[in-house]
Length: 96
Image 1 (cartoon, helix red, strand yellow):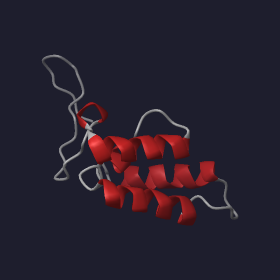
Image 2 (cartoon, helix red, strand yellow):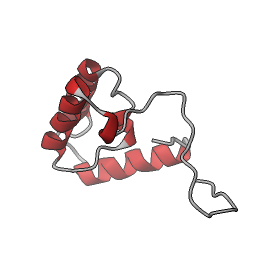
Image 3 (tube, rainbow, N blue to C red):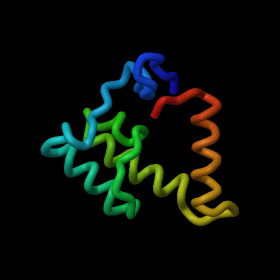
């Protein structure tokens, strides 16, 4: 992320996708985030999940699909698959 010279705080990357933050999530979106947390064992919902927050019904489908396709047993461990996905996102300059 780039920095502002006047206060040296990182700027939040701009995106055309409306990202719903945890604090702003209500009803179905909050429930979908909780569903993701329960399945992942993590507390912080990543931006790639939050970008689907406007469509919690679709978010649940994406999570289920991802768990089935990306994180099922195979030649690579989940950790290695996540590292590859993170690196590809970095190469694509994906802000989330």
